[in-house]
Image 1 (cartoon, rainbow, N blue to C red):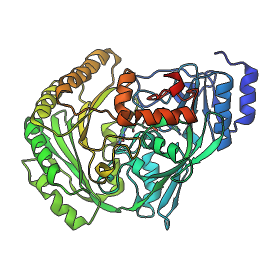
Image 2: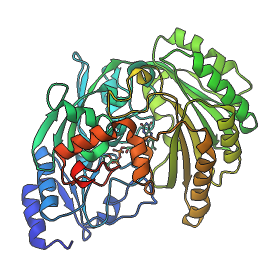
Image 3: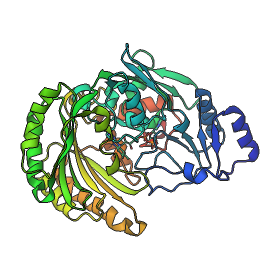
Image 4: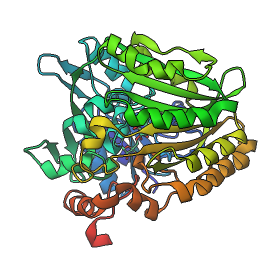
Length: 454
Ligand SMILES: Cc1cc2nc3c(=O)[nH]c(=O)nc-3n(C[C@H](O)[C@H](O)[C@H](O)COP(=O)(O)OP(=O)(O)OC[C@H]3O[C@@H](n4cnc5c(N)ncnc54)[C@H](O)[C@@H]3O)c2cc1C
């Protein structure tokens, strides 16, 4: 839809934050999202500063029948934080994080990234489960589930979400807590951006650090199968608080490798005892597991996944790292076209796994998240990199346990995969969607159809 100058002026009168249109010299920068495969041209990018701005943007979208994309940290691999010819509500200018240390609560605006959130909470010796890469947005990650290093002790990010403030499709501003619109809070704990625009998140915090046991060991790729076999056995007996992830990757020296990264956010001496078998296994080429600041652990993977690269990802869940899974993974990674690509096994364990699948909208409460991640920087190489992910994913199918993390659905994952992501919670989510967004204004996401439209 073509927007008239008059319409834009009207929006600018009711929306105090920036409104960036294609004529603006900042437009090309402002329309970029983390995954450089996504190249969309919104009609305008609204950067609210207040709840009233968000309301104005939502009402403007309705009035002009514009598609609405909502952007927190812009990390959606499917590029859900942008759109063609619609409005992007971009929270780049709403990033405040307020910590109530005595109450162990943080309230954060949706533009905050995990590194910003962690910095504020760690200033008080507190933290909650967040993403493993610091520049990921708190908003999209929280709304999809949120696995992270602290989940074994404290549950997933959604398990620590105490409440949210939301601007609905009508422009109405509501709170979602255990006592107020409790159905909405349940849905926000894993149902994504389907129900409205979240303008603040309230999280439970826990005492963490400042030092924890963290870091990783790296083994030569020739030993990858043995390392993954060890990892699978080790995780079966490790205490809840120990979260360890295994990764197939290429080291900075260009050599393929297999790593185990760990976090133990408890007593340091006890943690050193628990991680000792990982350090003693085999002959690692690198071992940096030991006491370190929690903030350093949260920054550890930043360089492994830099922004502005071309990305194609597929994800699954596996119940364990079986011999079959290992055989497919190691063989596939031996032929990976890009050295920046990786395969990640991240467990859902401890406190995260003791939450019933229907207790929050995020249902996948056991096993390992498997991410097959292609990252590369030359568009001429799109085909082999995409093909590598698809082929690896297809070969993995006989060995997966079913389910996919909603936050790692790709642009080409259809309604069948969306349904798998929400699993047993889809129908309840559809009822809540019907109540809060019956016209499906918020459809640029892993979309739950309102019941009237199914
Ligand atoms: C490098 C990298 C590392 C990652 N690591 C982890 C990890 O450790 N753990 C994990 O669980 N996931 C991880 N993810 C996946 C991550 O959870 C998703 O990419 C998530 O969408 C990121 O949130 P965002 O706010 O940055 O994304 P955005 O692209 O800004 O938003 C994604 C979607 O969330 C919804 N949304 C965002 N803001 C709002 C809002 N204010 N109100 C309503 N809906 C909103 C919208 O539907 C939006 O399209 C990672 C992703 C990347 C790229």
